[in-house]
Amino acid sequence: FWIPGLAGAIVVLVASMKLLAVDRSAPVPHVQIELLRQVPIFACLNGPALEGVAHQLVPVTKGPGEVVIREGDHGEVYYLIADGTLVVSREGSRVATIGRGQGFGEIALLRDSPRTATVTAETEVLLYALDKEPFILVLTGHAAAHDTASAIASGHLRSLGLHEATGSEPGTD
Image (tube, rainbow, N blue to C red; front, side):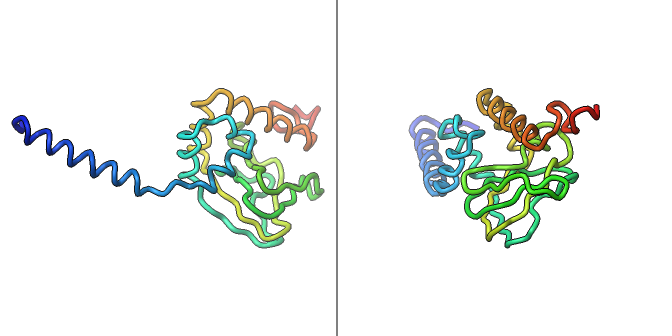
């Protein structure tokens, strides 16, 4: 399909203007981008990468006492904390309290293993969920983000008293 000279240029110009208008009308998730900048895993990403991740986030609210993830369950989601506090427990014992600007759930996603702890809302919480596929894709494309995520996962495993490679208790391999 061929359009002669000037007519072809006009068609291309009109189509380009429509695409630019669509791009300009897409909302930029500023709040989510700023939250991502606070989380060490994502802090090293550039603006376009952060915006791409921000568009994948799904808001989740939980009330006090509601379980977000349960120890032993299969993990398919990483969570960022936008507001509120949560309790991390292992085998029924409280091991940490986490809040705004922190994330959780990376161990199961990075190691393809069961959840290593239970995370329960202590207060009303606003979380942003990021599915496993976009989480892994962003880490695969950014070495610094991957290294940071791995270091955080290792630190979390140590704080839970678990073995680095498998997530099992030391001496049980």
